[in-house]
Amino acid sequence: MIALTRLNGKSFTLNALYIETVEAFPDTTILLTNGRRYVVKEAVHEVNALSLSFFQKVNLLNLAQEGGSTS
Image (cartoon, rainbow, N blue to C red; front, top):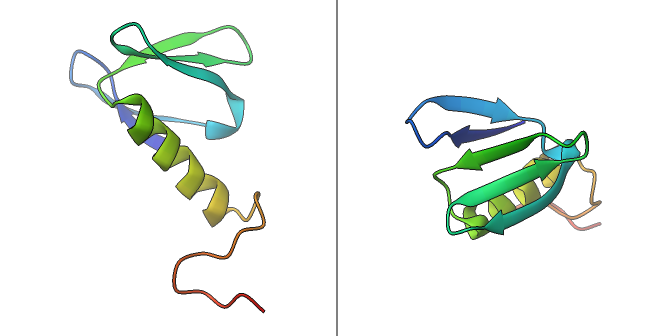
C-alpha cells in the first residue's frame, strides 16, 4: 500500500499492485486495473518512487533493498 493525497487534501492508501498507468493531465491521474481513476497531489515521479519502494518492501521485484545484502 502507498500513501497518497487527494486534491482536497485528504490522505488515503492505495494498493500499488493494481496501478495500470500514472499520467499527468496536468494533475497526476492514476488508473487502476479495475478502471477506477484517482487524481492525486503527488507528482508522477513521486508515485513511481512510492510504488517502487512498496514493491521492494514486499520483495516483488527481487531487488536488494538499500543497505541490504546482495548475496
